[in-house]
Length: 249
Image 1 (cartoon, rainbow, N blue to C red):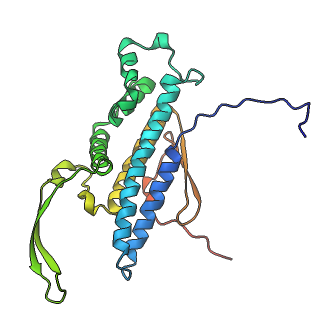
Image 2 (spheres, rainbow, N blue to C red; image 1 turned 45 degrees about the horizontal axis):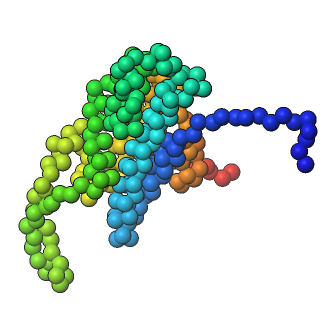
């Protein structure tokens, strides 16, 4: 039975999927890393590749979700403290915001950073983000390429063969000079780690420039909360060390 003396309170909450995507990306990266350690099970390598590819996509989605969260507060939700009133938005910004949903990630990042701090991404970080965006497009849009292989018959396996040499139609080393991603069919947990390291750097930088802190939870191998505070020193390597296990007394 409702208490007649209790007042109803309306609470507004701006929701974002960034934490869900980021936590899942870390879980899949760690699981992929554990799988390849067990070489006794031949299918592990294939499972680890799938997890790594998914981790990369979820990591990128976490960044997109975070940028849309900030953009919503900054440009589209009048009740937010940091909302820029329409009469304070110049002509170029208003024109820019009309195409917000179709803008490149790099453009959203720089627009937000400029609106909060009159700064844009450092060139080294921007270059890596452009390469990650490119990899994301190759994965998400299923872009196609081909290989030409020199093969040799396997002496013990009928219809089996070795690949002696192979030529790929895309020069991946030139496409990913900064991040050094492998070709999409060969992505592994190391590529997922490269992706997540960049994402953590970006989250921390955005936190520092906007005074927003970020939180997410991982569940592999056990539940563990994480915080990203741009105004505090950060040990990024700690995100990639094996989780500590509690020792029983």
